[in-house]
Length: 456
Image 1 (tube, rainbow, N blue to C red):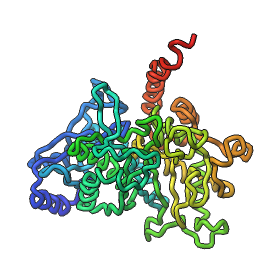
Image 2: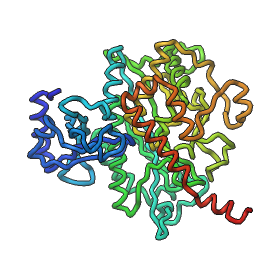
Image 3: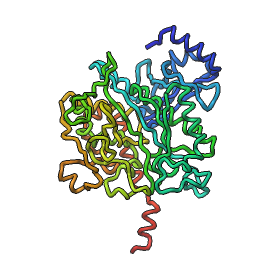
Image 4: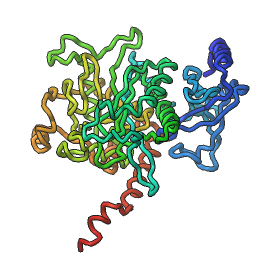
């Protein structure tokens, strides 16, 4: 749909005031990886009306081959984002079109479709995200190690450690300063539970805005880290013995007309401050959780952090911080869904490796299915799930999330609702993930060599 002329002209003046010479017309592939073309600002109108052309067959999961018509990325004027690390360049999130029609394989178009349906019901989905990531360096032998120029980030429990965060203060200042100049309201950052792991928080927004910002955040970390001789990675679990990286989502559903949080109810008999609608939404998430995992934890590596087992497995700090149980509770980080405050839910299972457009589309559809069907999530779980243990939890009817990409994809293949949330992307997604699993499963790892080479 054409943008109002006054918005176009206002932005044209803003581009000139900000000294913008080039525009990045940016979208994502099926994995959520940022793709872009650089367009001179003199072709600003072309980027709006026609779009920058791409060969979809050159990208993963775009539903095209070498014979297909061009995909055209048309910029969304509401997403004007000057690059904090590069003067004279601005990014616009873009929607893909083919033959002048919205392209259904575009993850951003798909999320807009889902959110449009939600708005027709009178609701908005507001989402905040906790973008955990690592700073690493590559060693001469090709391995990676923690970026630690001071040699002080070595504690088994490094979370919030002053000496550990000190070398990264300038990196974090650059990130937060850039985010705040963009109006994101970045309000805190910290050293996370693993050596070399950081988190930068910014204010919640509409789900589409948050997906756009999370995508740009990953772009920003990759570029600013280079300034300090580091590689910023959002790989879910780059180190076997350290906590993995999540993209925890904090969310509530709001009334589209008033903006009021419809998950909030101070008279909640469980004392969590949640409305009946919130409980039904949780019920939908729990009902579809096994299939949702394929979309919110979409890589082989994601399941290295999403493991059921003793808390000491997989982390030097003594905690995994990644619930693999399909449960909800109060302000309790051993639950999949934590009530982080009245009317405020957090899902702690979402992987840093997700495509946020696909993840939030699937999440919204799953939750609203619970609302539509009045699904009951059962009583809140107030225990420490790790202390209770797997056997007892299973006796209590608490299910676990899939423990591998193969398991979650099989669940997705059975869940028509979650597939519908992805539109035609679902078939591409399932096919690519099945190939990914087969490729991974054929690899001979160093662990296997160390264990079996001389065993027999």
